[in-house]
Length: 201
Image (cartoon, rainbow, N blue to C red):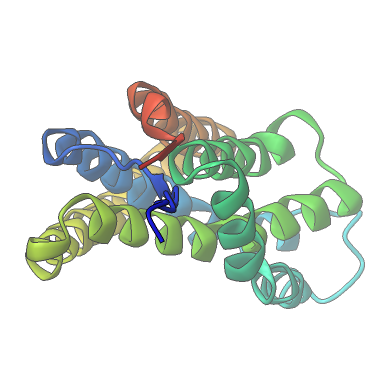
């Protein structure tokens, strides 16, 4: 047989290693922002007179949102791209963090808890997957760096939020700051969207 069969294989492009600092900064901002809701959402519920249920119920809602989150965001990422999915999840989370500032009710707290639960684990999954894809030969060191920056954000976030809450006698400035931090993390990743495409070889 003289004929040749040419097989095309779809290959997903990934961001280059030089994009990793943007991912690292964004992940640090996520650690700083998400922990504020994680720290104060029960207190917010407890201080909402219309919230008749046990304030800890909001953590049940967070857990229910978290159960399918990694699978859902990974599925979304495989279809639309990891960078787009990471940005989307951070924007959704920032909306959930800020929601009680503009609409404080039992229902809004439930929605906020659901959006929070549906994103924080998904964001971790997407960010670490992107790190492995971007630098597969050095993924352990990169993920360690991400984790360290994330942990620093987790330490700084409650300190700043606690100071703001004590000074203003309101959770709103802390929530707005946390939502802004997470949103800006998503903005920093916008330059990576161009890598969310598939080529054939």
